[in-house]
Image 1 (cartoon, rainbow, N blue to C red):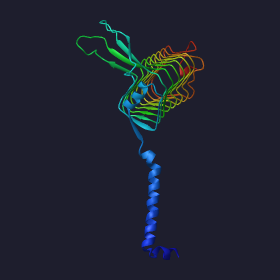
Image 2: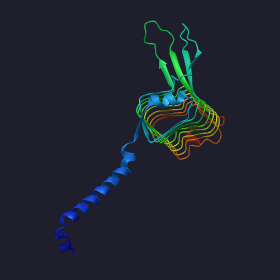
Image 3: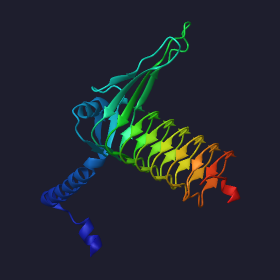
Length: 276
């Protein structure tokens, strides 16, 4: 019976009905896929304009084109004069409203630190350094940084969330100060992860973080407990002179490359993961 039905002529009306059904199904599929196929693209300058208006910034599932330069905000001020002796001239901008980026891709650089390096000039003069501080909560979650992410010397006054991100190039947090909780759990650092001289005033977390190359925590100071449980250090891990407080965890952390825990202290005592 099925064979007879399939071989039976449909006629023009039956053919049109089948085509209508197929077209309707195709349109429904396109509508369902539209949000995925047309992920929104945002220019970095649009975000800077919002920050300059002191508006809360919240983006999800967007691609951000251009460098997000937070060092050149409308409230930028000079905080230190340079000198002929080589002292840097310093400017600071301040992000005065909360910012949140979830499942976003940054095609350009994310800059909270920038310097005009003049050391190659014949007559050495002082450099000019630009920084950005953050007065409110900061969230970068499930994001991809295709280029450098530079937060050197930045101050985070409120909670800083950097969870489940992928840093494809340098992640620069050298001399950064976290006044509140900081969380980098689940992130992957494919390039140089620079936390040298960083100061964590409250608890911090690096659970399940993957450091693919160089993890630099030399001279880093943690005032409250830090959690490195299940972290993977696939390249160099440098914790020389690092201060670790009581409650710090390296449970199930893996070190595949070279390590340096010389002069590292845990609650004031010499420490290395293999000697606990």
